[in-house]
Image (cartoon, rainbow, N blue to C red):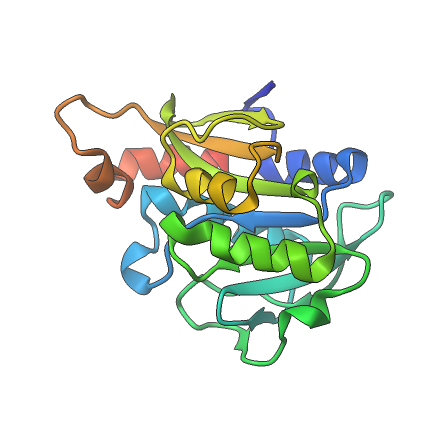
Amino acid sequence: MTRIDATEHRLYSEISIQYTYAMISLLLGLGNIGRKYIGTRHNLGFELLDRVAAKLGASERRRTELFDWVKVDIRPSTSLGTAEGGLGTAGGGHGMSEKGESEELLGQGLILAWPRTYVNCSGDAAIKLLEDNGIRPSEMLALVDDFNLPLGALRFRSGGSDGGHNGLASLIETLGTEDFPRLRMGIGPVDKSTDIVDFVLSKFTASERKSADTML
């Protein structure tokens, strides 16, 4: 397990490292679709993936029933690549193409995917992506928020339990394994008197937003 200091490392740098050296074929950002969820704590996975897509030069994201996606050709010698698909705010309908069934994803490259199933059913999108593209769970990196970690803390794990995260629970149940890597982004702590669901579905305060942006 690797702990990352968010003040010294950008998340997309860590992802680039994991792709190059661990042969990650799919980045799966967890979040909820719809404008009312934009900027909420539970959507950090979407936010990170949006930034990665921009960093990698994605131009037009595509949409299927279960997920939005973009495929990027990344060369080990560079942090940039060419992209098929594109960029926009998940659930917002920007920069989106209705074409692009999942079989079009076949081929070499790094797939970035935003499930359209809501967090609690993320496994439905993941299993479709893995099965259609011949990707093993160990080649998928899930990007998730974590209320067990303090805001700004990052933790990379190669596997393990869901830690109380319903999206990870869905992935584990649907894929039938805990053995897939995940990058957990701290959004805690949570006050004992606060309902967890209300907390993760709420937006950051102004000061928390600055810390989250620094982490991203």
